[in-house]
Image 1 (tube, rainbow, N blue to C red):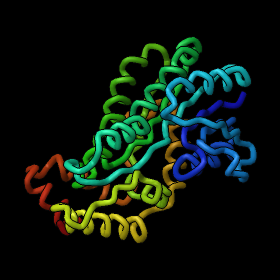
Image 2: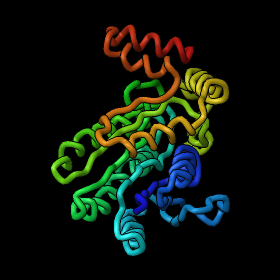
Image 3: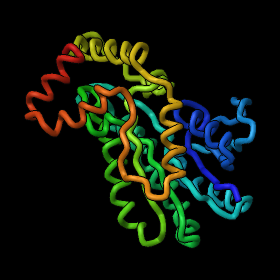
Image 4: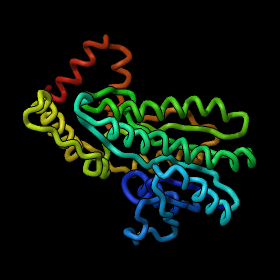
Length: 269
């Protein structure tokens, strides 16, 4: 019997790569998208219209899949949004919007899936987080905080749900060729802002990294497949460029002031 997988944000980026790879490996895949009719190349994958921040809609999506399949074996919390900007000049609404997408929306979907997983005494919840959740970066404070929150949520949930046969795993990718940089919440800084010059350099370096040093998201999809097939997966996985993964270990070793200086030198601020 095929395993049934529900993926949030399956139409682009990591979600797209994961959905297509799992479908080609004989999984029954349901994906969510804000505009599923826009995408026509998802043969064998059911794209469902769903906005992660519409908190009253998650139960309907889950009930629809359960009505057809009778179970959901794997939930992949992938949908997310990017955001960068100086904390002093961003609006509280922008910060809330980011957390609604990157954190609270996932909690809502988890809550809707858990009753059926508990009943079946089986399930896997996979959170696509970010190396940014480990490595705090200037002008990325709210984004990093949202991803760090998902890391903490996943680790705590794994303990809460273990006795019910449910495992929770976090995957933290580095820079990959996805649409998140272009689709991030736009933050336009006025040229008279005291942060303008540093923020401009930060964006330039970030875009250069994304254009020239990012990797193929199929790597994340392959790791996801490996974890799903594993009988005893770990809790935290990091995937990406060696230096990005190594930076997490470096942060544990170096004094915080020295580590922050290296980060600021990298972004030339």
